[in-house]
Image (cartoon, rainbow, N blue to C red; front, side, top):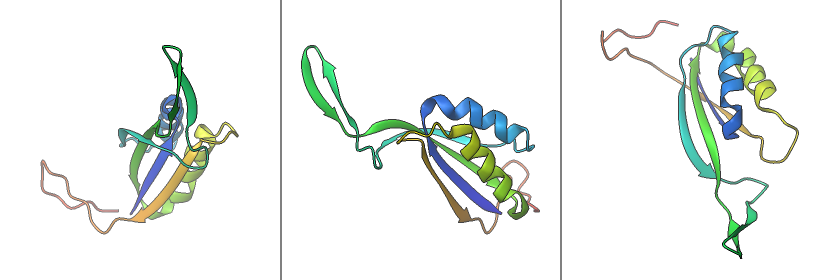
Length: 110
């Protein structure tokens, strides 16, 4: 199993959820996060004063998928989140050794 972490624009979460749903990947965790990459924030104006916004609002999506579904899931996430502009986000892949269902105590079989 692999854990896919995607940091994306907030308005892309529904697109990604739909794209993963087409692959029968149903479970995901979505967290509001703040950060910056190459875009390094932007200048905003509030009550007539300019200020730097260096940590931009983003969404982090976490999905655990079987090893055989990783490539398709990555393609779906990237395809659904891409605008072609700086700030589209990043995708990271990490191994998952084991998973357990808290309610039943059963170990995940993948």
